Image (cartoon, rainbow, N blue to C red):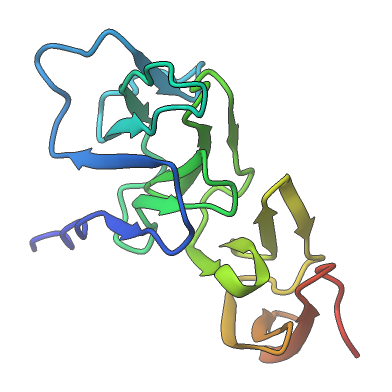
Length: 197
């Protein structure tokens, strides 16, 4: 039996951004002068890592912005776990996702990054009108805004969150309720992440 192939990396540049990036098929034989590995403590990061060549836009002071290679450790080798790059509500930041492990990297100072705690992130949604990038996990949703983490929902599901609609500042969806063996609908306020009655 042939295993499911890993899909091509997803690219979502919905938010305005101050960088250009290219997902490489493999690590270059000659590394650029600036190379960063995420997370810092990763072991055997090369195996299945997402390699992204990032070219930050020149800063307003006219100084030169140097490109860098971002090597992002792979979370899961599973077609259900997304991989790719997303622009974020903060124009200098890039979100790189490798097999469900999500890294938010400051392209102006690539030493600064945040790793989303979900292992794995199952879906990423750009909500430009709300100024949020959503990370959907097995049990809850984390929202990332211009200033970092905006909110994290309470537990919405025992196993799997489905988003059905986003409109008028409200996110609607369903989560699996194990005790009753059924899907339970929910509605979240996108400003606070609070459950609505």
